[in-house]
Length: 183
Ligand SMILES: Cc1cc2nc3c(=O)[nH]c(=O)nc-3n(C[C@H](O)[C@H](O)[C@H](O)COP(=O)(O)O)c2cc1C
Image (cartoon, rainbow, N blue to C red; front, side, top):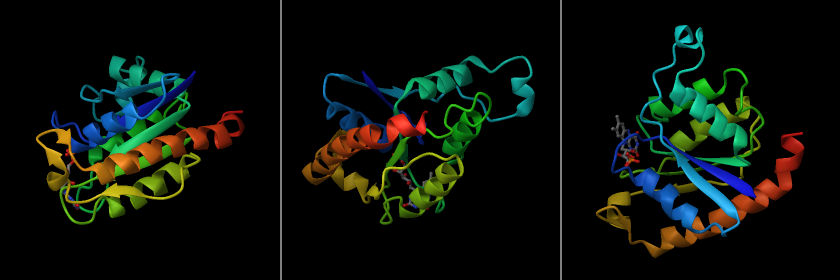
């Protein structure tokens, strides 16, 4: 079974990015396991916290990434970059046994503003290239998200259509790079 893990860069209960991930997840076929990691309890990285073993939320994060065939990062944009909480998750996941290293990955993201995470996604690409993650090419970014939602329901069919295509592209990407990158 192919496993896809969603990681959201926003901790907000009503995060648009988490909802984009949830909609994406509905487009995977039944033989794909899709889950979204709940990052609310992950502490700010501090090497002292590793001394007696990882905190439980960090162990759960590392295990979920290790089991995944592909990790989809959904990022908002904060001040032209990724939120600190997203970088924090990546920093934890880069520590032994370094489950993110070489892991196939994809990026999606959306903002309520007009840049639609273009800056944040470039920053995230930079970090994930550093971690040797084979990254799905292209940019799946959405601007002005308040206009695309009714409350927390995505009503924009153009966005759903792009997420549907993205789900297919992610599975193709796993088939293409998965076996070689995890060898
Ligand atoms: C501290 C902060 C900085 C932000 N900076 C940007 C920015 O640089 N560019 C942008 O397009 N949106 C920016 N935003 C807007 C967020 O991207 C927007 O609120 C987004 O919807 C948050 O994602 P979420 O709904 O998943 O929480 C910022 C929001 C916050 C809280």
